[in-house]
Amino acid sequence: MTLALLGLAGALWLLGPRPTPRPLVPDETSGPPRRSTRRRQRLRRRRSRPPGPRDLETLLDLWAVVLGAGGTVAGAIQVAADDGPPSLRPALRSAIDARAGGASLAVALDRLADLGPTFAAPVRALVAAERDGAPLGATLQMLAAEAASAREAAAVTEARTLSVRVVVPLACCSLPAVVLGVVVPLLLTSAGDSAVP
Image (cartoon, rainbow, N blue to C red; front, side, top):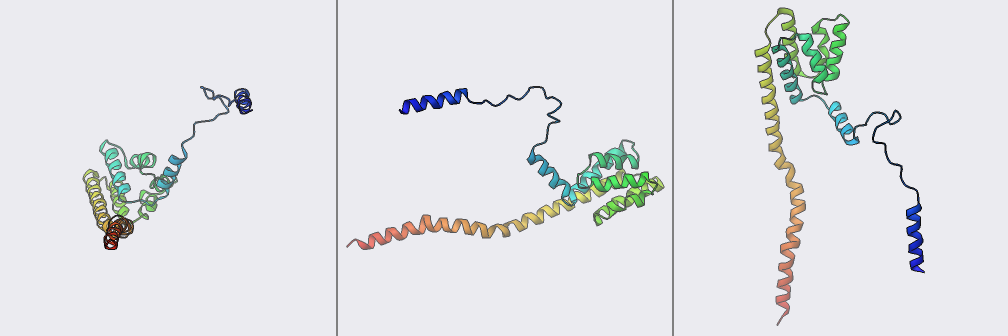
């Protein structure tokens, strides 16, 4: 009886429905390949976080490269809007749109300067370079060095506070292990020794 049921189950498995194979060449209905969910979530988080010192440093380096290669201030803003840090792209794109609408560079870059006091100095340098024709290479390098040192100082501060934040979880995890692994066996051994006459 058992053998007959196993045979029937095997026959149903062999004759049962098979999944349709996916085509090797995508057709019109399959659409473009989609990004993985994890990657989309990571990109969404990166775009939604507020700009930090690393973003400023990247932006300044990008502007220095474009302007050092002979590009214009408007070209540097366009390159940064296309390839710069994701958290700064909306502000840079709005500056490009305002500039295309006829606004001056100082007015167009107001939104970028509103992101924080660290962005005010680069905006002033760009406006001065556009207005007066002042060279920006040394200024951008100095501002990038300041941004890098601010980022390093923030990392050092974070590393110093890490030891304080780790104390409680470490104590909560290791103290019970020490009690169960060392103290309990010692108590059991001493209790066993005292029971023997």
